[in-house]
Length: 399
Ligand SMILES: [Zn+2]
Image 1 (cartoon, protein in one colour):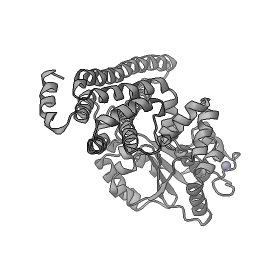
Image 2 (cartoon, protein in one colour):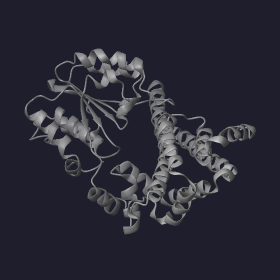
Image 3 (cartoon, protein in one colour):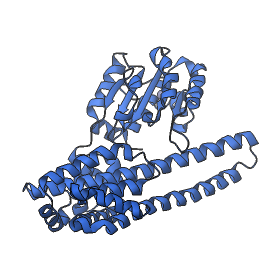
Image 4 (spheres, protein in one colour):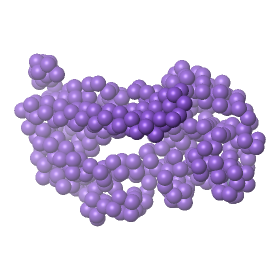
């Protein structure tokens, strides 16, 4: 968890609006925090929950840290703060989960204080779950607060959105990102500049990039080589796509093993527990781990499409003769120039458009990542008249 004073700095406007609402006693019963990814949304939600269940809260979002409410919160066992998260391989918040939450809301709160529900990844609410939730959202009991978190605000159901106050968190400033890279991620100067540029204020992206910088750079270089080959790149495209897919499968398989191990350990730890309790706990652990892995793979797919966009963005910048310091992949400048020379401006723009069209929905496609990627890359290298040929060629490979 980040220090809340840091979050207050980063998200000054969101923080101030929550403070103001608390001060004037007009805190909305349902708030959505829309975040660009790991920029303090969890910490804000937690601080707000702390504040709402504290028996002698201070100014703004401050809680006393001493009362029994604060004590239970610090133990993570406060009965009036309830968490809703997606479960299962489909990463959905099911109607059953919402049902359980609503049953919990019917119990009396401790000392008559607030009840807080934190809904993580609220975009995972299914239509059915949302319907179940709507009535509660429309007529919340006086001391019940819902805090919804999402980094994919565009996927949150409109029926939910329209009943909540939306608070948008902002990407971090360049100087805040530099601090994250240097102090938190211990990156050197050159790496810091690169990561700050590529992550565009999204701390989550910076964390992820910092752990895979060399793979990222290799992928970027490989892609430029593919684009430089134009029509002759088909075998290389196939290899690139299949490799990416394999890497994801390996991660998934390794994760399955981790799940088995973790369940075995928990099972040993709970050997004297009641069998029904044990069963529930094991299922909870499995659900949480499956979700974590599904998110990781989803991020990997999103990163791959983002890399494609960023590469074409750079090619476009080089092509248009703009200052090269605005190029993201400056270490690949000679390759970028070479590729910019062999594509028309029209082709470059078309390729960027195509990726933008595909990347949103494709991130959620779990099965055919390699085929989608292969199709997309093939379209990038080929002018319109060879596309039919390429499509047939891909079909013939049986992939
Ligand atoms: Zn307190």
